[in-house]
Amino acid sequence: MKIKFFTIAVSTSLLSLLVACNEDEAPAPAPPVQTTIKADAGTDQDILPNQMVTLDGTASKGADAKTFSWTLIKKPSNSNITLSQTSTSKPTFTPDIVGYYEMELTVSSGTEKSTDRVQVKAEYPTPIIIEQDIKSDTRLFDRIIDPTKPDYIVKKDIAVYSALSIDRGVAVAFERDKALNIEEKGSVVADGVAEQRIRFTGMELQAGFWAGIKLFSPSTANSLAFTDIEFAGSRIAFTNTKAGLALFGNNKAQLAITDSKFTSNGGYGLYVQNGSVLRKFERNAFSKQVEAPMLIDAYNATLLDAASKFTGNNGRDAVEINSSDIRGTQEVSWPSFADKTPYRLLGNMAVEAGWSLKPGVTVEVARDAMISINRNGYLSAKGTKENKVTIKGSSQNAAHWKGLIIYSVSALNELDHTEIIGAGSAVIVSGQRSAVTTYGRGAKLMVKNSKITKSGGYGIMYTSDAELNSDAATTNTFESNAQSDLHKL
Image (cartoon, rainbow, N blue to C red):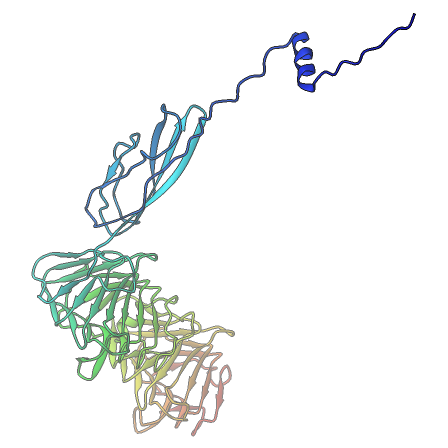
């Protein structure tokens, strides 16, 4: 008997079905439902300040059951705004000042969350023209974000008879030769911050384009902080003096100036007339003045600070001081500036108080001018070996200025590590020339570790009734003086 074999063809799909039917397993799970959250805070908006803004997060995608949370991320530093209804899809707020506002939307559903941000820019489209005197309390608000564009344009000389306050970030631009005058009954407060400076500038950015600011006000409110005064000084502020900012002494004008910049002004950056007061002066900078950084009186020079900068391509990098006096009952000092700027006396100076010159100070004296330490004052010029005090002529020529004369009876009169250069240009007393003179009954002076050179007369001269340290001839250095080192009258 023969056995026959048969071949049966079974398809792959049928085989798989047969195998699956024989296995004791559950069916594969269905794919998960997509519930991904995507926050959408809406489009950026440009609006006017004080105009209500409605944010819109309704375009956010995801589960029906989702929550909204809005957070204010960024606003101008002096803005006081808050968001209302932050857990809704459409909260509102009203920008209170010019600037950028940024909000973050967080959308949540269960453990899922998504964030998105929106920006609102608030500003006015055009500057305001100022053509009328200010006779009531006035506040100038920031209008345009771009700091290079003016918020206000001054088209005529403006007198301020009331309180004028200027917000951070404001730029006031002046037409040619126009001025801002803060009158006796007015005041000005222009307090910016490092990120939002205040600018007084010209419509054209050229030195001496507009007239400048004249301050007659004695108000203690007057203040400039992080404020720039630039391209002013087109007209004379006083006698032949031009300046970006001028303070006048008849009404005892006073002003606090901090962290401010004076740039490209015709004449001086700052002029302070005798009788006015720099109530506060800190960390200011002067550059590119046509003449010098400032012209002030001898007393206000004692109110300057070491950290301010006076060197920066000015016509003359020196703090210039008018012929004036130092008076008072307490010692005052001239600091040594960090940038080594010298003081420059443009005329005679009389001292009726304690006057201290700090180590590193340089005083330059104009042709034939003199320094008098009078009966009620004294001079303490005490340098160090490394940082001497220097009093010299404003020119390098020998015998350029008249000299230093001491009438004071104070035991505090002292020159220590001090250089006196180029004095004795003219007779100082009793028909004689001398770099340093101690004159009259009881007048006192201690001179040690000092150097006196290039005098047109004696090095030191003193009267028989005055007191000079007995070792003055040996404890000091004398060079290139026209006459002897010491001379007793």
